[in-house]
Image 1 (cartoon, protein in one colour):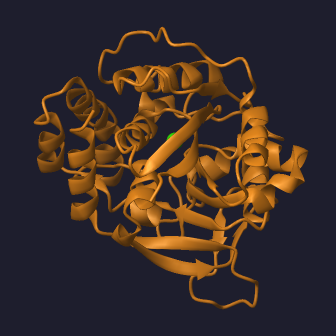
Image 2 (tube, helix red, strand yellow):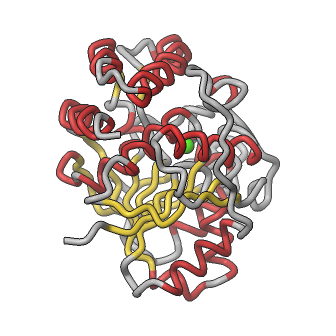
Image 3 (tube, protein in one colour):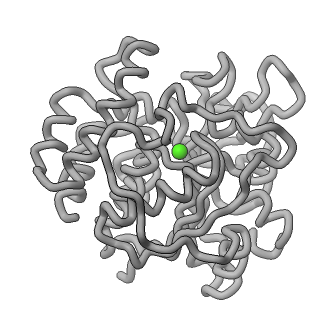
Length: 313
Ligand SMILES: [Ca+2]
């Protein structure tokens, strides 16, 4: 079977970095057509730079990296330096990238790629606010039916919120974009906090990553140690949740995850619950299902996959 073609849309972010590394470590499973950066955890000049730092760390400087939207569709950008540090990639000391940033705008790349590739063969992997994807859908509505699947990290149901009591960060930052994406009609698979809060980097799991002994293994261990300080304090959990790699792990090994095909709507009107993913987990409405909303993960299997794959870089 030929590898699945993906575009990673991202706001690195240490967990984005791990998601990208997992994809680049798995060329038999995933062909990364390009990486499109968006403003999110940190502003765009840093996310596009961080994406290139990660590609070079992976030893894949030939990867195409594009810069996209620098602000949400209708709101002021909210960032998360309190979690990810000033650079977005705090933890390891990594060199500034020398590989180029592509001239083309990320949105144009997404549109052109979906039009150029055979229909139903390109999967979008949004790991940050959904601005780039929504702007592409708005500008080129014809691409919606050409998308094989959108597999995204965002939202929550049982875990409710992490940036506000009601909302997860990626959806909260650009709720209008999320609304557009969830209504686009393409198959959508969601990795919400309900899943990612079970993908915890315990000391034992982090030791296994460090024990890979390569620059990638050591950098990943240092990244997770950095944002773990914040998460442990916040959640009192055994380790930091590794959000975004759930997306790329799902594409490699979908059996690690279970969920429900349900209706998910995005709150854009209420100040109190802005960006909430109103997920009809219990099927109490007759609204049509529009997303497969994951609820559980085989965390040991996930970390085994991650450790084995990162060891290949
Ligand atoms: Ca992210």
